[in-house]
Length: 56
Image 1 (tube, rainbow, N blue to C red):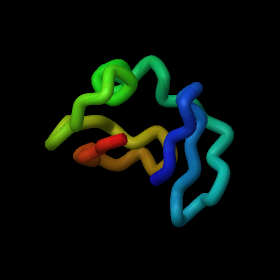
Image 2: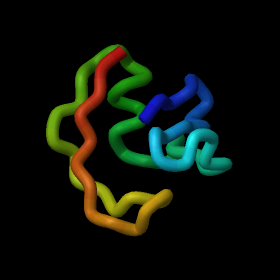
Image 3: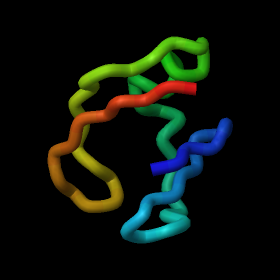
């Protein structure tokens, strides 16, 4: 997945999702320049349980 600075994002499966992740707990961590490793979420685009790993 690719997340833009405002939280809008793209996925391989759906391309542009029309959804926003800026209210997710890991988003502010990424915005502050830190890595996210193993943050559990329920995917908004698939409805499945997922784990987020991210870096800038």
